[in-house]
Image (cartoon, rainbow over all chains, first blue to last red):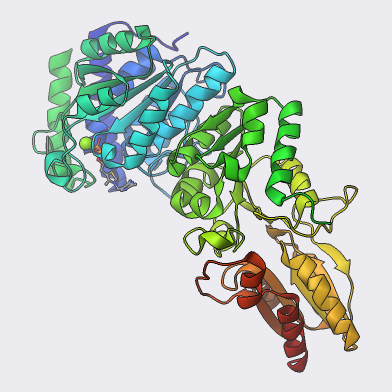
Amino acid sequence: MVFQKIECTNKLAELAQKVRIDVLEMVYGAQSGHLGGSFSAAEILVTLYYNRLNVDPENPSWPDRDRFVLAKGHAAPALYVVLAGLGFFPREELASLRQTGCILQGHPDMRKTPGVEMSTGSLGQGLSTAVGMALAAQLDGKDYRVWVLLGDGELNEGQVWEAAAFAAGRGLSNLTAIVDYNKVQLDGPTVEVLPMEPVADKWRAFGWHVVEADGHCVKDLLRAYDEAVAYNGGPTVILAHTVKGKGVSFMEGQAAWHGAAPNAQQYEQAMKELRRDLECSR
Amino acid sequence: MQSLTMREAYAQALVALGERNPNVVVLDADVSKSTRSTLFAERFPERFFNVGIAEGNMMNIAGGLAASGKIPFVNTFSFLLTLRAGEQLRTGVAYPRLNVKVAGAYCGLSDSFDGPTHQDPMDIAVTRAMPNMVVISVCDAVQAKKVVLAAAKYDGPVYFRLNRNAVPVLWREEDPFEIGKAVWHARGRDVTIVATGIMVARALQAREMLAAEGISAGVLEVHTIKPIDVDALVEAAKECGAIVTAEEHNIIGGLGGAVAEVLGEHVPVPMERVGIRDVFAESGNYDELLVKYGMCPSAVAEAARKVLRRK
Ligand SMILES: Cc1ncc(C[n+]2csc(CCOP(=O)(O)OP(=O)(O)O)c2C)c(N)n1
Ligand SMILES: [Mg+2]
């Protein structure tokens, strides 16, 4: 059973925009954290947690729960907002992001934050971890699913392709990878840092079922999830086309906003834009 | 008694463990014939995963399995587990404190003919610096079986290093093995040789050489490098006032380093380290390499004489 399941796409879109607002607040407050990759993943995380994942905030280690691994661990702020929203921990914790003694580490820590399935942040490892979880489900004859969100820059890591080959070889139909396909990584556009195109063909060549989606359109994401779940011939990857820094005009598509914290003026401007879009979406 | 190789004994113990515990799973990276994890693969094909030549992937898959209630034993050469997949071990296993057992095959110089690319004089140094890790150095085939059981029983990440070859057996089936508890093989008045792995047997030989000269040397086996048995080391240092460490590892960062840290803080006494002296070795016959690189019994005895002169 999906906890607090939301079917209404308008409501999901609104929640995603609220996630951006909370993330901006947190990163501005901490003066540290990753906005660009959190904003691009907002709709993905909201649709997963409010519409798809079988998880129970009252019982985070329920053995039959679906698993979600945030391979691109630097989007932790967005994940934290979603987990707090579902009640895994009090929303008041959000203000403590990255502060000494807090439960919300700079990157996800499964031992500190309820609801976090795996400690991540070192790119390239998450898909392998998810593969391990999917194998365990098979061994135990359980029908939970494993979802993992990767960055498109993260695809540079050779280990991603080791895991991709293995998952396909094992026919892990209970595994869905989503790529936050925002075309930007830390140092610049992915085409400039290390061209990986054609990305879809690469996944296909590794034996994966490929689904493309608009990563900011909740309806399209839900359709992609349906398609992934329905496919039984092996693992599916959803290439979710997104915009890094989505929602803030001066951050969109800018590698400079990968991991920078805004000053007061930038914060005001960004907040104004996010709030305005939230009003329009209502 | 040089019957079973340590790796064969390990693999047999793994099968026995698998019979009793259905949560035990085994991973290998295309060297299962070498590590002998192939024994487990034959008995429990559904619980064995050969990931191919992809060590980092293997380590994180193990983490995912452990996070889902399995007890994965991860196998390949020790240098690949601790260096190639070392970051995955640190971030994906040690940091989240996952219940993964890492079996470092072909430790030290034991893959002697393959040469320095495959030999591993630094796995203890690497794993010892990882918080949450238990680090064990196995001394013989009997102990290998006990380590498998103890590691499985312990909830958390364990690294243990295994020798490739048949080595003299010191342990008896009835000897109790406890993680973190050093073992006295012999007491001495003048000096204590603190040894680990295959150097325990060699330390006992050195002890006999020294006895012939009227020197009384004890032998303390420290199989668990971390957490190290501080009490036993302090007792040894107080009793003899001189310590020699002996390991098949770089003298930097391994047992010698760990013991020096303890003595320095608790009982500073003269100490000498026997081990690989911060060099890459070479291809060759295993026993010849152990002599050439300073890990034969006479090298241990010489270190004891030297430390006694400093007393
Ligand atoms: C192994 C590793 N190398 C480098 C980094 C530093 N780093 C953090 S985020 C990032 C860029 C990630 O780009 P991408 O995967 O495209 O993520 P997104 O655009 O969604 O933020 C880098 C290089 C890291 N966390 N891990
Ligand atoms: Mg990107």
